[in-house]
Length: 248
Image 1: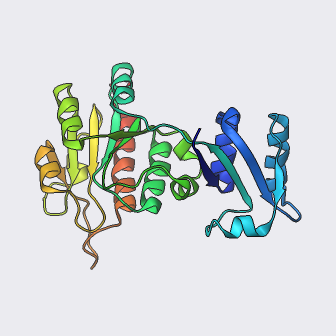
Image 2 (image 1 turned 30 degrees about the vertical axis):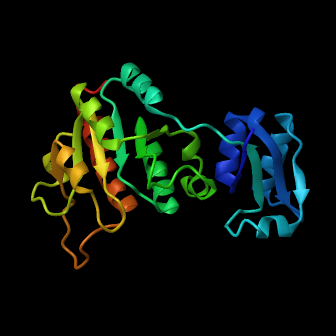
C-alpha cells in the first residue's frame, strides 16, 4: 500500500488517535523530548505502536516545521461524490465549502482548520488544478484534516448543480457585488463558494451561484487572502446558524 508522511504534533496526534492501525512508522528526533513529545511517545506505546528515535537528517529532509515528530502512514483514498451523497442524505441543513482551484496548501490547511471549528460538514475541491491533502495541509490544519470531510470531485460545476437540484443554495464570494455576506440567510442548506488565489471565482463557477456576496471593507486593501475570507464568511454562517430557531 502506498505511504505518505505526516508531521507536526497536532497532525500526528490526531492521526494516531483516530487511525493507529494505519501507522507504519512513528519517529521522534533524537535528543531530549519535550513534555508534549514525551506524552505523544507514551501515548503511541500505549496504542501498541513502536515509536523510534530518528536522526536529525531525516527530519531536515522534510524541509518543514516538523516539531520533531513525523509518521509514515498508509495513504488514504480521496473521498468522492459517493461520500458526498451520503453526507447529504444523512445531514439536515448541511453547510459545505466549495473551493474553486485553491492551490496553496497553507490556504487549504487554514480553511480546514476553520471549517472544523465552525462545524462545516464537507469541504469540496475539484480533482484538477487544486492542492489536495498533503503533509503541509495536515500540518497547517493542526488535526482538522483528520476530522473535516475533504471531498474531491471530477467536475465542480456539475456537483454544484446536482446539490442545487436537491435544495442547496450556493453563495459565491465576489468583491464586485454590493450585497454583503450580512445580507444573506446562511441558515439552511448552504454552499459557500470561494475562488482561487488572486483571480477569485472563475466565470462558470460564478454563473452557477444562486447569489454573490462580498465582505465589506473600509481599508486600502482590495481583497483578503482566500483562507481569511473563508473564515470571515464561515463565522457569519456560524453566528446565524446558532441563533436560528429552526436549526436542527
